[in-house]
Length: 325
Image (cartoon, rainbow, N blue to C red; front, side, top):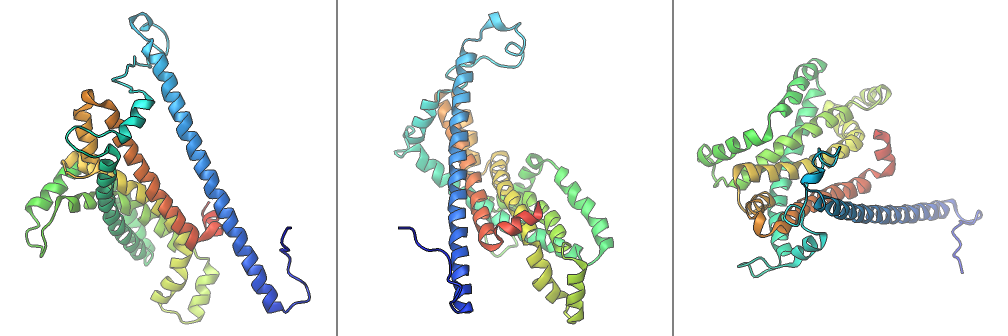
């Protein structure tokens, strides 16, 4: 028997409003569950299609030899494949649960441990990048002339190759920070590298969000004799949340990329970047392990993106996200 979801017209207005709010909250929860299920199904279908495309090309690439070198497309762009260059999907899946020689534990547990190490570096870099980027955005809102002078330099800072500055940052951390009251470790340098990629989207989107309130809203705050800090806290920051969360999703995944690239280029041990480098060196003895390591990095990026999206939905909601687009 279907429950009655309509509120009687003769009941007290306060009770009716409470009923309607509860009904709207239930509908939002159902919509969120449906959206999550759709996203999971789409992701599963994408993974299946990717696996099928991988397997199909492997079948085609295995048949390529010197006789097809003059063929258009196949001979020019599609390289020959074999089990070493492209291990079968079944080998990659079994490699997740296999125990590498001398470890005594499943490979996925090794990947999970190293993913947690990389996540720590990325999380610290993300937090610092958010604080730095939002601080720069707040400062730039105080003066249009300051904004026009500094924004081009903020943009230009991202033109420096990350792989070039990563070893420099690690060396500085090892040699030049002895004055700190704590021991500087290599993973902290990797977090600084992640910060470098993180602060930029937060600065640009944060500036856009802080300048998004309409003039009449700013005039209303002025009519209340609100101080600059009160206007910032009560108007500008709440208005900037949709813009900031759009930047947070970019920054979170960029922090993971920065951490992995920093580990690879600086040789920092313990994380996914080092694992990718090691498995690349041992590729001939177990090519599927390199694929598993790369998949672990991809899963880590999806996880941090999903966490930021969930927090965004809880704080901003669908209406706030749509206002940015």
